[in-house]
Length: 209
Image: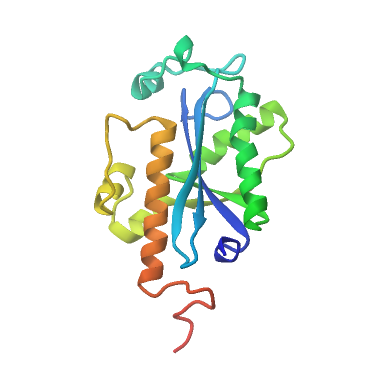
């Protein structure tokens, strides 16, 4: 069971697109989450994806360089952007449901440079005074670190290519696309670790002399 694999935490992959690097002042523009599960053989796989475009909160800073990098126009009506609280609700509800159905006690955020994503999620939660955040407040799994260990690559695109996961630079810098690719990378690394004799549901396999 996945509830036994990560000490009772359900890994959920998250990616955000923002209008800068400061989560206290810069707008959250996109947020996406990918829920994973485990089959009867202990293999992780992608189950569900959720995404929302977010309207800048009142007084939010919009860095021109950040918008040029992502290609996001925060005020494009075709984005159908949601208020920050509605977007957070949309993302959190299926995560809470997955935590409950999996028998886990809480979700843990998985991200590529995860502290950045968690920081923006936590800042949005604080702004809207959300009371039902499913994520651990500070612990994360970081695929930049895992990919650096497994492949010697810390850039998401290069890590995916090293893992034989297709990656399109044209589709990158969309929260949903990057979250989905990060989820594939996370599952690939964890599954490969198991294939090589890693975690088998018991004690750490290299604990004995």
